[in-house]
Length: 94
Image 1 (cartoon, rainbow, N blue to C red):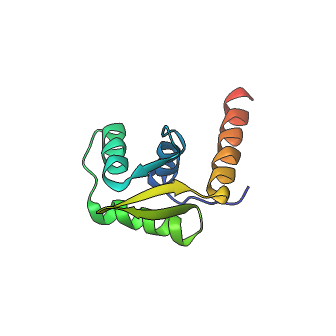
Image 2: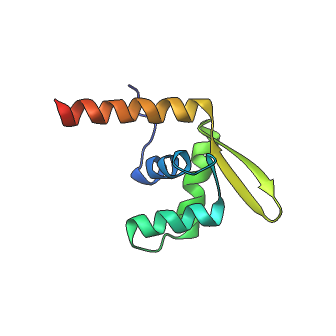
Image 3: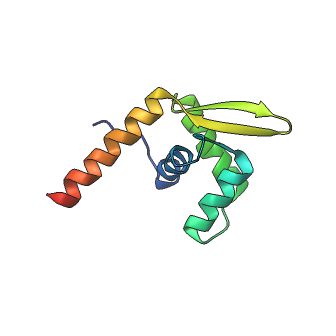
């Protein structure tokens, strides 16, 4: 498997979106969930830099709903997340 995420933040953003009820999250809700997971505040520059990188690499889609951006995984993002999950399972079971 190629290295598709270069930070845990990007990986965890994908995990949170994949686990959302409808497979998408508004930016602020996503940031809040990530901060709760890490139990610390995340600088907006770091958060949005991760989001932009994931979009640029084709792993996230965004759409505007009112005043907020809403993010979802692309097929490529879903595939890579599944591959990473399988890799983790193999490491933990092996």
